[in-house]
Length: 275
Image (tube, rainbow, N blue to C red):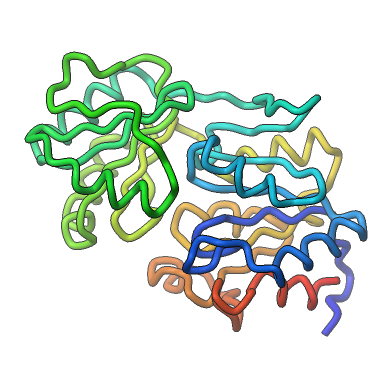
């Protein structure tokens, strides 16, 4: 069914749980659909919580240009002359960083530390099991691991991400939200993740700037995602679509949920409806 009174000019989509299937691959069906959309003049944007270096191999599969929103909106990247240049480069306040470190030390939580596109792992007891979990899920490589806070950097931190079981995450999350209110954005993504990003930063804020730079009305932007860190961009766009496999937290507050999951080529099937 063709959508009426709507001109699709840009598509922004999450990677994990949306464009990527459960094997962390872009299906040939989705790739062909994106190529078709690009051929019809649709701009393509990847909007992910991942660190930028783990996004580059994915978009290298595209036989067309695209833009990247990474770190949940703390980075907006455009490719120029073979290099990815940041149009947005936000960082966390150093006092916020210190407080996250202290809380993870007290609560014995594993923490990812992202600085200048380099990833470090921290756990107060030297338990780095969650690092393996994260690396397998995102193909990320840790530069080093620490079990004390002294050597950890506190400046130019793009994002912090704690990893634990879903049950522990749910127990700690309300307290994190309250403690950091107005100081940084605290958001859920995967069931095990709590993300700390600069205040006022989200995928939506990065996409708003992108739309202004490209002179594309927000009303003609479609967004697709699956987790709570996608909610702002799903609501921000002219049309937001959550995958059928989206988290319970998304389903509870967002109505426009696709019939299809990320393993059923949701991106391709929704694009077929839109074009």
